[in-house]
Amino acid sequence: MVESLDALEDEALMLAYAGGRADAFERLYDRHSLRIWRYLFRNTGNHALADDLGQEVWFAVVDAAPGYRVKARFSTWLFTLAHHKLVDHWRGHRKVQSLDDDSPESRRLAETLFAHSGFEPERWQGRKELARALLAALAELPAEQRAAFLLQAEGDLSVADIAAATGVPPETAKTRLRYARAKLRQALEVLA
Image (cartoon, rainbow, N blue to C red; front, side, top):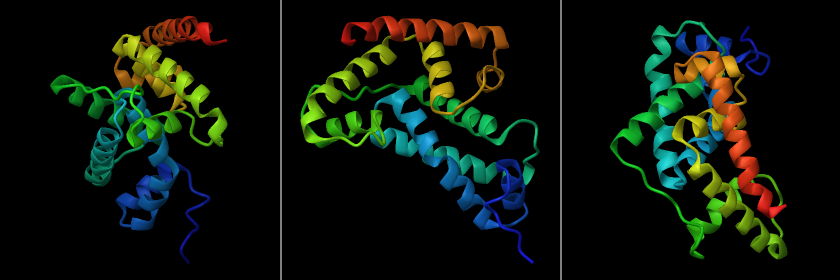
C-alpha cells in the first residue's frame, strides 16, 4: 500500500523522492516554492530573476536527491541552496526593480510584497508607498543583514538555521538579525 504523502515530514518526502517517488517532489515543491520565490524576489526585486533563480534552486534539489542525507531540517537545507544561488548571482551582477513607474511589473512587485493581503483599489496608493519604503529599507541593509532577515521572514528559519545557511556562527547570525530589524524599524517609523 502506498503511504500518504500529506502526513510525511519534508525530510521523509525528500528521501522518498530520492528513492524514486516523483510525487514526493511535487509535494515538496507545493509546500516550499512560494516561500523560496519570495525570499529570492525580496532579495533581487525582480520577478523574472526570482523565477530563474527559483528554477535553479529546484534543479539543484533534483540534482542533489540521489545523495541526499538528513543532516538538518529540509527547509534549512533548501534555503541554504537558495542563499547560495543568490550569492552566485550577486557575484555577477545585480538589478533593482523600481516602484516609481506605473507599469504592470511595478504593480506586481508592490502586490507581491503584501501577498494574501486582499488589495482593494482604494488602498493601492498607500500600499504602493509602504511597499516602496519597505523595498528601499531592505535595499539599504547590508547584504548579510538582508539575507539573515529574509531567511527568517520568508524561510521561517531559526537563528541556528540562518547561521548554518550562511556559514557564520550563531551569534553573528543573531547580531545581523538584530541590526536588520533595528534599521528596518527606524526606516519605516516615518510611515507610522
